[in-house]
Structure formats: structure tokens, C-alpha cells
Length: 284
Image 1 (cartoon, rainbow, N blue to C red):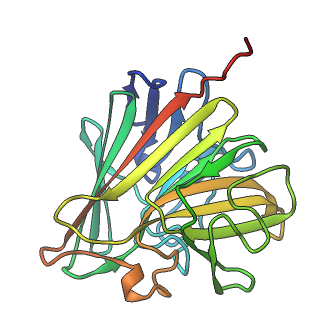
Image 2 (cartoon, rainbow, N blue to C red):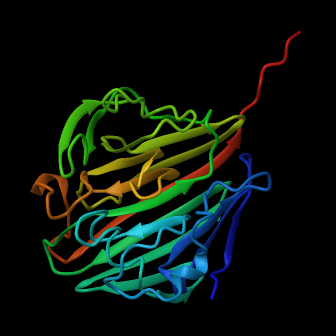
């Protein structure tokens, strides 16, 4: 079963998002009329997701994954990617895992795709939630964030390690530029609430935050894998993940790096995505 297409148009390039509620609520397309922004894993067909059950190893089909209540750790990519979502209509869907319920609404207007997330559960419950978008971009693409925010390299240089640095340093690897495959893989948590992905003349702009009345850290996870992972058959994949929280592993995350439900047992946050074409100055 495939969810509806939500389309946007305006002064920016028209942008649409397609999701698959039956197979983990994943984003299967984020596209303008000129290009598809989401990468699909050529090694794993989307149909491979059809037989998964909660607790199964993660199946990396590409696209965009909703990761809750953690991004990695014992439950890799969380616990909702392997569950069917209930469709409420008008771009709204929801899923439950344990004592948490995630509701998502998607709409598009004025050239912008807007996602709104509400998480319900036990008051004070700690969690992480990321929108794990794997991008189909060329080796000349770059990632732009404002300033030089604090950055944590996770799982590097040793598994489970956390190494503090400053954007765009990735331990000798530039996190903001891609380039050809170089056999490296880095995962980093960046203290920012916005990102521009520039690929040639195309720009994808993301901005996110917690709704008024709620309090929680937000950040960005960058997955820069240029043929450095996995050990038994590395391939190229580039991920950007707007995130509620500031770590990737809930079991390891300090209290101030987790998002927590309020006294009513609720937390709401939003994500906007827009696309544009970059004008080039022509010589006189």
C-alpha cells in the first residue's frame, strides 16, 4: 500500500513527498519535477521490507526512515521502521511501539513540505527521534550549516566512542563536502537546527524545531559513508537526519541530550523542507 502524493508549488521549485505507511511509514520519494532527492539502495529492493517484523535486523532500502525511540544501538534505526502505520487521512498517519505513539502529519504549500510530529507516552519518558533521509547527490554536493557549531563524532575512532569536534571537521575528513569514494565512513551529531544541501544548481533546505510550549534539544545527524561501511561489502550512502535530541544511542545518551515528554506525556516538533534552483550569474 502506498500513501498519497503531497505536492507543493510556489516561488520555489515544486516539491512533493510520497510515503509508504504499510512499510514503516518511510519516505519513498522527495522530488521536484527535475529530480529525485532520495537515494534508493540498488542492492536491496523496497519489497525486502515487506516481510520484516519488530526486532528484525534493519533493512537498508534507502529513502527516508523515521527512527524512534533511538537511532542506533541495540534497536538499530529504532522500533517503528518495521511496523505498519495506521493512516488517518489528509497526509496523517500514526504508529505505536511499546508505550510510545508517534503521529505524523504531512502537508505541502507555498513550495514547502511541512511535517509535524507528536509523540505521546509516559510523562518524562526519554527518547530520540530522527528523520533519516538518505540523499541521491553527486560527489560535488556540499552540506551547509550556519557557523561552526559543536559536533560529536559517534562510533569513531572506536566502536561506541564519542569524539567532540567542531563543524565541519570529521576527524580529518571534511563533513561538509563529499567527493568521490575514499573508503571512509563518519557519523556525526551537529548542534544546528537547519541545513542546506547544495548539489549543482539545486538546493534542498531543511529547518526544524520544537513547537511552542515544549522544550527539548534538536540537532542534525550527518551520515557520510563514501564506501567505508559495512566491512563485508561497503557502498556509498549519504544521510542527513533532522533530530529531536542530541545523540544517536538512547542507551548511551546523557539526560540533557535526550528529548523528554512533558508532564502530560507529550512532545511536538516540526520539520520543513523546500527546494530551489540556484541562479547562476551569466557573463556580460
